[in-house]
Amino acid sequence: ETGVTQTPRHLVMGMTNKKSLKCEQHLGHNAMYWYKQSAKKPLELMFVYNFKEQTENNSVPSRFSPECPNSSHLFLHLHTLQPEDSALYLCASSQGGGYTEAFFGQGTRLTVV
Amino acid sequence: DAKTTQPPSMDCAEGRAANLPCNHSTISGNEYVYWYRQIHSQGPQYIIHGLKNNETNEMASLIITEDRKSSTLILPHATLRDTAVYYCIVRVAGGSQGNLIFGKGTKLSVKP
Image 1 (tube, rainbow over the protein chains, first blue to last red):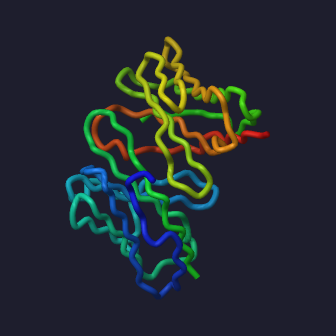
Image 2: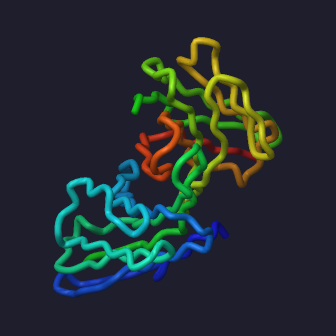
Image 3: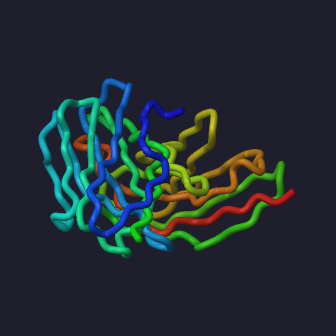
């Protein structure tokens, strides 16, 4: 248990569906992140939020839409995805500043059919 | 952030020390060396970090060469549960600590 909880753990969706991934952290951190890990590829940072504000978007397609209503919750809204978007989506949080580590959730395994 | 180079895979016998090397020859003076690991289908887990002095915690030891161009992560008594992909990451301190550039890492297989 890392203090970062992601739901659901597994998700299968069609290309025309709309779904959302949820991340919640119980660590009092003020920064949250979405990562994508495709098969046989390194983890790729998608979005960074600091104090609920998006501070980084690494050229992620608009079919991925993040939302951070407060410092403890982060969502990733998905719509009209492609099969190549199938991957493990990981959420992380950190305190920010200094040199503390990041804490990752267990991830959501997404399959687009 | 500086690039790191790690061997793609290593084997280690259970109970023996696992020594995982990392080259970071272009590291800057204000960049730290971080190690994370990822057990199959789980999120990465922080292990240890250091600037220039050797560091030790309950999980591992980090040995950084004097010129800081390479480092070694040591798991003193590897167990089967240490089988994972180990990532060496170099970055400056401060800022968003979850903003990490992951390479391919080293896949460590601990064998009975």
